[in-house]
Image (cartoon, rainbow, N blue to C red; front, side, top):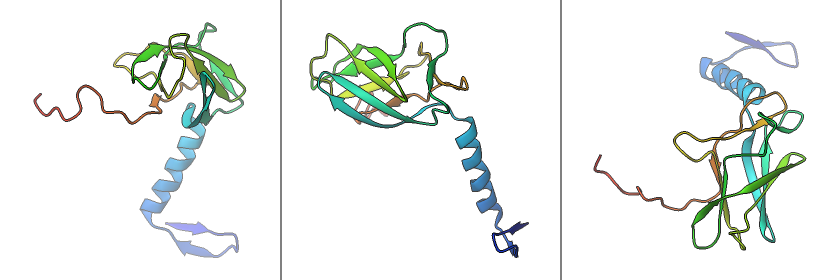
Length: 139
């Protein structure tokens, strides 16, 4: 295969490089919102996303679903979540000092966050806590 660069000269291109380029283009065009970062703001956590297209949306027009928030005790509670521009602000009256958020973090989650093109948000967690099954090798 050959590729034409900016100087209009041809050069060979490796198939893996071509696959990587195509994969990156597909991800950029066909991915729903993906977690980028978060910021704790008093009793809320603001979630920042990549791949929002022209903004975030709710697929069914109801309140956002699928968000859980935890404090320093590592106990997650279902959360209230509100779209604010290209971010989501997450809170719960049960968590006064939030430290972590999870979205669609279940086997069969009920969730409805999308980007403006209707692509669903990617499940994510902001924590790296060891779960109940950590280290369990007996299946």
